Amino acid sequence: MSLDDEGYQPRTNKICFIPACTNTSVKKPGLKFFCIRKELTENWCQLVGRNCPKKKKLLCCEDHLNVKEDLQNYENYLAGARARLKLSATLKNIPTPRVAVDFGIVKLKSKKKSDNSSDTKYAGKHGRNHLMAKIASKPKIYLGLPKNYVWAIDLLAKESSCLPLDIIITLFKIKTNDTFIQMSDEFEIPRCTIRLLFEENVYMLATFLQNIVYLPSLYEIKKNLPLMLRMKYSKVQMIIDCFEIQIEKPSKAFRRAQTRSQNKSCNTVKYLIACTAVGFIAFISKGYGGRISDKAIACKSGLIDIVPPNAVIMAGRGFKEIECLLSTKNVKLLCPPSVRSYSKLTKEDVIKTNEISPLSANIERVIKKVQEFHMLKPHAVVNHKHLKYLDEIVTIACGLINLQNPVLNADWQIE
Image 1: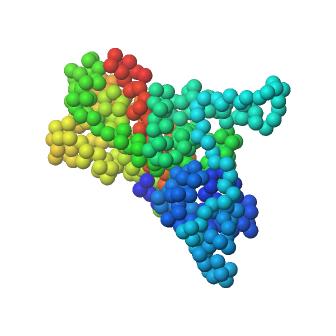
Image 2: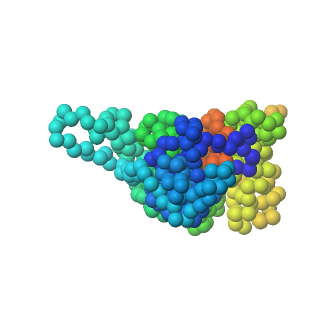
Image 3: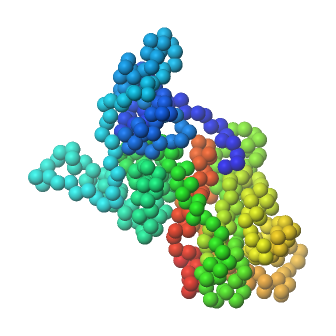
């Protein structure tokens, strides 16, 4: 988002980059951690079964290294110099890597029915297999992904060189907004590993899913528009509106003023969203402070730049001021008539409002779909540590919504 991360403190806890290793500097204060060289990062990440971050530095604990043989400057390191690994350094004592979890329940074989060995611990009611079975039966509820697009998880995992479970964990967090501690119990993976997987994969998912959010051509919009609406609204290319997400109260007074929303009476991040007549999301802006007006966010977000000439846009009353900006591209703006306390609507205004309202309600239905992702609820109170991921999370949600059924089908029935 365009705001700075208020009050965000860099992580001081050192964590081993190996997913199956639970060593941290908090659990073991005396344990040494060494920074992995860029030349070794990609090979080592493939070896331990995790995706390789582009900019983030990774640390490895001394349990998986021979410090005396693998350090290039071992004698200087003992004297207080910064450690530097050799290019020939190799990992040792690697724990069993995590296996990609299929949606289906793994059938655990046992010779005796009364066998209570540790091999059957995941077959219980609260095991990870039970959770994966629920996700497989209802992926839209737990991941926001339609059942006919479950194959996309394997495709994304293959393109990004990560495990399908990593993508499932990231989507599960966005959809349910469970805490990392709760997810650690549900997936039976250490909490620090859950958090690292979420932070690394949220950018990757946003990069892929942002390609699904685009403005279709006028021919495609007309083709998918119900016959009953083609007579009046065949030229309407998009409907625009804004929605807000509550965040934690910033510590700085300037940030509090910048994010203070008059409509919500709290600190929020505001987004501009545009969809077609049937509810296909065509544009999503970056996040701005809740204080920004509808006109300002329409100008700064770049929406006007993507609107083709001679198009028709439908919007609420708050966007009437951008009509002069759209006129430069010969774009027509459809808005409901203004309502004043001391005057009544004329007959023509009532007719115009009744003509616009059936179609303009679709943007409200789309916003409700966005708010079905629990991290994006109106009063989600987003943690300040997650603010820097909020734009990517909104992009992921919009991409997943475009994979779902449209809010208005060809028979003009609301999904």
